[in-house]
Image (cartoon, rainbow, N blue to C red; front, side, top):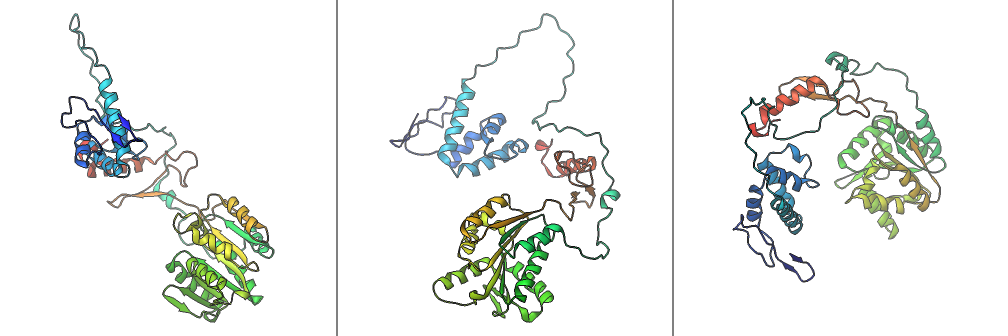
Length: 381
């Protein structure tokens, strides 16, 4: 019985659990919950774990109790209530009738071995798996060839003449080329360019890379622990540094000449969705001077059209979305066993779409071998 409004909590337990009697105005201790969980069948623990523990069907009883105890710390009262409800349902079930003795003894057919747990049955594919040599074929450094920009790259650079641009393309497709060409054009027009990244390490890498492209005298860096060539036309910094500069400019303190700012490049702009740091990207975009064009780059924004629409509502010019889905550098998935054995992860050379469960037969064998070598005997499947 629970009366949440008056703060009164009373739990009635079955006589089989004499140690758990009526409780008033307190929640069970961790030791009491652990003892109660240990007394329950594994099927009840799996029911309790649904919606709380991922892949709970693969865990043994002791491991499952440990995970449930950790989870119960977040909401002890709710966890305790669910546990007691399941126990009550278990006790309320009628006992099965005793089996009747057969009229005559007959040979019993041998029953298949019982399985302690069930995993979803994956549809088997009759397509033979690729060989390791064919899976490795083509990997390596490609031969040199003349660079030809993709149509989406040229479109992004052209749109930046008129408005802000959000570029959402797969990793390795050439986002940096757009940033370099847009920065080159802005510098030629005597405009300042600011390139931001979410990490100091990435900012240092871009500083080295852009110094080779534009020349060391044309590139500066501003981070929390480094300040070099702060009056250069192309400045590399973290997004937090730029946000702070915009704060200072709003208060009349000018550290960088923002009146000449022509282009702001926000790399890894998917951080705008980060629960803790996303506000930095939002404020940077909101406080960015209207005369500067914004270029947002990302390979993992889930809703780039929403970001582009939002920029259109708060900025003086419409924002264009450049979206490209073809992966220039294809991905291949493999599995490396601790014993050094390498095998394709899937039956196909590339990563299949729509049938990710079609694992390579050798990969499945190595998975089973790894479980036999590492999992306790009671948890092997």
